[in-house]
Amino acid sequence: MAALDVAVVTFPSAQILDVTGPLEVFSSATHLLPAAEYRTQVVSTSGGPVLASSGLSFSTTALSDVVEPVDTLVVAGGRDMDAARTDEDLLAHVRQLAGSARRVTSVCSGAFVLAAAGLLDGRRATTHWAECQLLATAHPQLSVDDDAIYVRDGDIWTSAGVTAGIDLALALVADDHGARAAAVVARHLVVYLRRSGGQAQFSTLLAAQAAESEPVRELLAWLPDHLTADLSVPALARRVHLSERQFSRVFKAEVGATPSEHVEGLRLEAACRLLETTGHAVDHIARICGFRVPETMNRTFRRRLNTTPGDHRRHFGHLAGQ
Image (tube, rainbow, N blue to C red; front, side, top):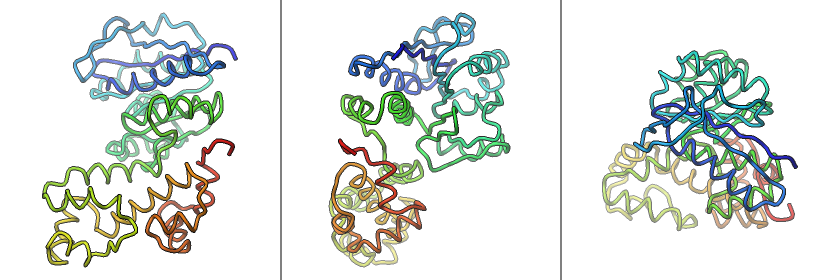
């Protein structure tokens, strides 16, 4: 397979991981996969050093110096998105490169640049969970999916916040070289080939990690390893030595979900992971994730993910030999 040219577009106050995450995936693929060769370059409007939001400065090539066509265009996100999405020079170059690229992608708030350039009109797209409503309001002509790690709509790919750029780049490698090849890269980088669930789930889990009261923090750390235990509100309230009413109030205030919603989310995520990475029977997965019977797990999948355990495995499973 011929070398694939990847241009990563950035700007001042860019999120550094939006740039380096995909670059590392493409670099690792080039070194690990005999059939893969990605030639990457980081570009900006004027070229030269760009200061990221983290304070790290990195060199870039001027957009006007990019040799077309590029195979893959990646637009990174960043802190000063208001300036980036109103930079007519940047938007003009992005439109030009996109016109000849095989696929156009964005990481995190980079979707705002694609939208401002008119490249997302009539498309499905996503961005960082905290910015989804803003994107939908600013660009009503596109459909925003606020519960996706990444979204592919034809030749346009958009991804959620920060580390989702790694998920996106792995999906691009899988698109080019197959799921097994992407799994090799993911294993090398010690990341999941495909994360379970959507970014709304992950934002809830991140919020849970920020719980302030010690009993709730300890309980949250204990829960994922005890999914088959009695995790009813009375049982959990007894565990943290609070009344049921007080426990429910404190938990909802600190976690952003009721105890039952959080437990169900943990069980669902565990089930997704096992469906994606093991050959265990569905009834076994239901039992070890605390659903007890397949019917309960099936209802949960339909209600929360609009799918079934079997369809989830067929769509996202990446066992060797699948």
